[in-house]
Length: 85
Image (tube, rainbow, N blue to C red; front, top):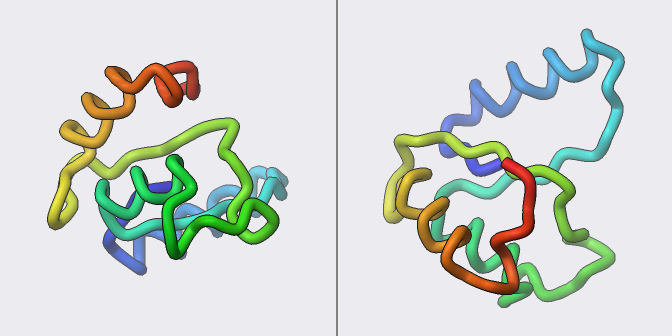
């Protein structure tokens, strides 16, 4: 999940637990970190600590690179464009 607000991250985790969905959730703070994560660039280059996501959830308004720009970059990257949204 790409989300820059810690309160929203907490609320999302709580909502998942309330829905009894216990899948692991990994958070990044903006679109730049999201692309680093997806491309396995440092500091996200350890696949055991940072597994490839089955789903990406984006905050549209983030610093450095917002969700719209990140989605555009992902959808035009042949290695990433098959990720569900």
